[in-house]
Image (cartoon, rainbow, N blue to C red; front, top):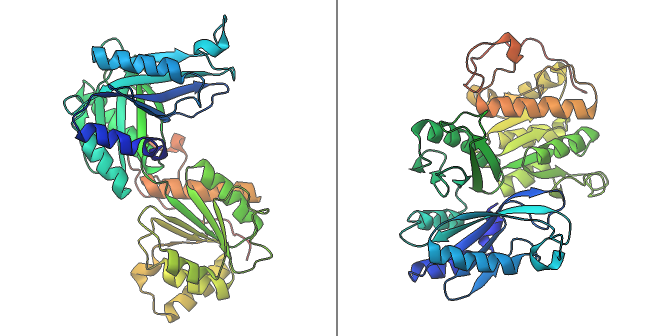
Length: 383
């Protein structure tokens, strides 16, 4: 994640701008118990300075020595560290886990795109770096991916296309991790190990209404990679104990909170209050934000009354058309957990242009934008 690079950002920038050579070691994979997650970084300068951490202290000494070797040779290396049979304290992990660490040399000549990455981090703009960390000859090849462009190459146009497509999906959720491909981008291949480092703040999920359905939606929102906020005006219900999976629990009138905090084009808004005194003022604000998705819970009768009230508040037909209500896809959901899956499915389908149909009932490429279909009647939610 971007947080890992921020740990070494100031020194990396200083070394790079001074024209110094250095090495960056990054955790690219972990097995069993590991002290740090993929994306954790440590930087080593040619003069012996070191910043950051890849293991919390277990193998830093060995990684430091490897970093110096990489600076001298100019060749990247993928190294696995686990428990040493002879002495776990020598070069191994005392926790019993295993980590793969990729160490690459960095200089103005070898990494001319680095200033763009640093600029993106400074401005909280999304960018991802896909690096070949395991192959028979492409190790160190790099592809930078933005939402609307890319730079560099991994060695094959078809591979670049496949990786860029997947990386944009990872970047959308600020996901960092390893992916494997064939030499021309075959997703069932295993020839190339490519590590994707995403630099983007996670998108926000705003859940309004501190009800049992909201707790389930918060859980699935976290699973999908969102920064989840639960908001309700009722302090007795909006508590950390009731919503342990949420990143934030806010006690405030929903429409006031949304007006204060705002929403961007990656934000999803789930209105679960189905009470006009809460949801009408809230939706009046929400439908005039650039939020990616806005859904509201309620029966069809509740929705009809809600739409009437919103029209009376002056919302246009175009604004009202942005509202997904009743919220979710028709999967026959009954429980809060099932309903949360229904809502999550609609959010994902909306993001990628999916039809919401069973894949067995469609044809054509699975990952292309699906044609719109008539959704049919959805089951009612609580009113």
